[in-house]
Length: 219
Ligand SMILES: [Zn+2]
Image (cartoon, rainbow, N blue to C red; front, side, top):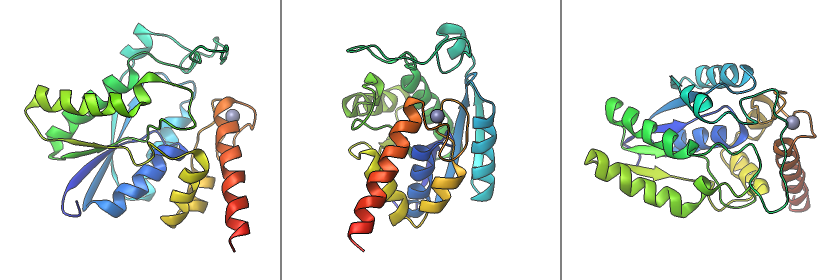
């Protein structure tokens, strides 16, 4: 894969930043794409921009505000509280989001001559979003190839990792400190370790704690 070009679906969070480092190691040329869809915090876009700049990665910003127009939800609206009822999807779920993102990412890939698309979706340790499942990604890969008569490959380096293992991957790539300090995952828009209370922070911080504990035991 070394000689080929890749596009990373990039939000500036822990997962997609780890994927960006992974792609930089695996591919000769890497570009990033961030979708703007009325995220609660403009800071997310700024963080994505500044990471791409620091890593010298060409960064595409695509307006997907129509997603918010179609399906206002807790990720895009300040006046909707984030919550998850037992046995239901959390209300941070945006219907069709990854289907749209991956479709647009492949259209962009065809424009810039990239064959590989990388996304940080993960089936393990996650909220049960249907469009993060491996079966969906595989199906989507077939669909975009049929739609565009192309042979794109969608990569999901985090698919079977839990959060602790995602931290481990960042560490193996030599970027643990970078990902800890320079990414934004928190639903309340606070950098690095975040507010510590929202579901995104809880998952991220618990995973880091677990990873550092295992790492400490093995040293
Ligand atoms: Zn938070």
